[in-house]
Length: 147
Image (cartoon, rainbow, N blue to C red):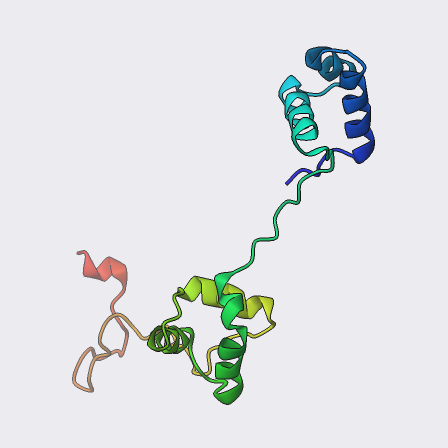
């Protein structure tokens, strides 16, 4: 996200417009969009303020339930996200797995798998012949399959 314009350029733009220059002339003089100059002047006339508005900083609704959510993990560290979402639903807290994941990530809590994942089956794709099968013990090759 781009940074806001400096307070210095905002002051010079407002001073130029207050001195009688048109908004378009000031925009061209400082290399700005005419619409941004119009917005700055409107805000200055309405509020007297030329500072940049704060950007970002939204707060998750789960922050209101911080103690409850962190307390769940403190009591039982091996809870899964799905179990925590179910516990939240029981007490009437709305939230998704994704929102919960981001909440815990912000608070430095991680969730790792404690069980091993199933390994890929690397067994043969054809049966091994029994004792009375192929005498040489050789296995068929793809060329022999398509004869």
